[in-house]
Amino acid sequence: MLSNCKGNVVNRMNLEQYKGVFIYAQQVDNKIDAIALELLGKANDLAADLGTDVTAVLIGSDVKGLVDELAEYGADKVIVVDDPELKEYRTEPYTHALASVINEYKPDILLVGATAIGRDLGPRVSARVATGLTADCTVLEIGEFKARGDKEPRQGQLLMTRPAFGGNIVATIVNPEHRPQMATVREGVMKKEIFNANHQGEIKMIDVNQFTTPEDFVIHVIERHMEKSKVNLKAAPIIVAGGYGVGSKENFQLLHELATVLGGEVGASRAAVDAGFCEHERQIGQTGTTVRPKLYIACGISGQIQHTAGMEESAMVIAINTDSNAPINKFADYVITGDLNVVIPKMIQYYKKNSK
Picture 1 (cartoon, one colour):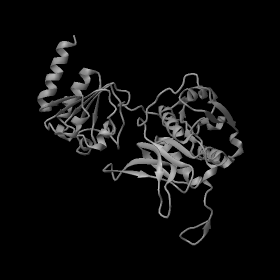
Picture 2: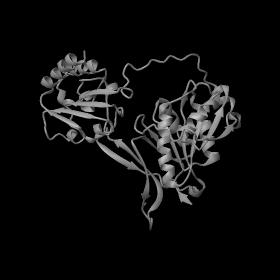
Picture 3: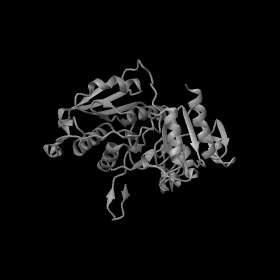
Picture 4: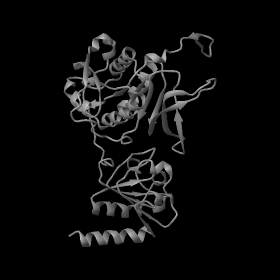
């Protein structure tokens, strides 16, 4: 038994009842979002460390046909909550559905994508099931943790790492007393890899009427308007990224010219965005987008951990910097020490001349 700050007695959770790694398999318009497949990859890693299995929770209307895709990416089981009323995402019915699944099946870990939907759904579900939530995680690992008063470290804890204080520090958070251990994970952080194309997942169908009431459906979606982002860094095979060292918004035009010539996109460090050199939607790093392009050209970027965490898995990195000792050079396959205002025009000229 535990006492809270008001002196009321509350029951300690029986943690041994909670087993398995669950993910919320977000779908929109009956298409599995990439973040769900990324989460399955990480869930399989965590499950292997814990000696348990992976379950995907799929909520929507007429979504049973998506089960095979989830199984390919590593779901051992898929819990399907399928009803016409769940065709569009609405906070209350989806919250009730996911919270009810947790209360029934008692997962040890639950991962949710840090999307617009996930950021709405995750905190509400964690409150309903009386557990904690670590938001916008960039690293998830199984490890040990020794709480105050523990004689021995607790094994099998989910170590949830996320940027804090605007990305200036990295914090690792644990939730040793409550279950499930919940985390939202940013898009693009985890790898999306097919686990086994022939993998078969066990299906469990759930009737939404078991745990919803008419009051959950008081909000009706009349129509939706979706505007696609003009910038798609995650899909870009080539990224030309600039940092504070680019010097100005005008100088960023050089990066745009190079990206256009190469058929790529322009990215930026947080320092460049904060300085007004570039739009926020192009920010790469712990507080921006995580990317894995075939070629990453870093221009005037020092290479602090807040930025490199978002691009370190690029297939090839070229660093252009006046500082030969810049930290970014440790990640680079090729280093060009020089003024980008001289180097980039020469790169553009050379490529135009030799690509015809």
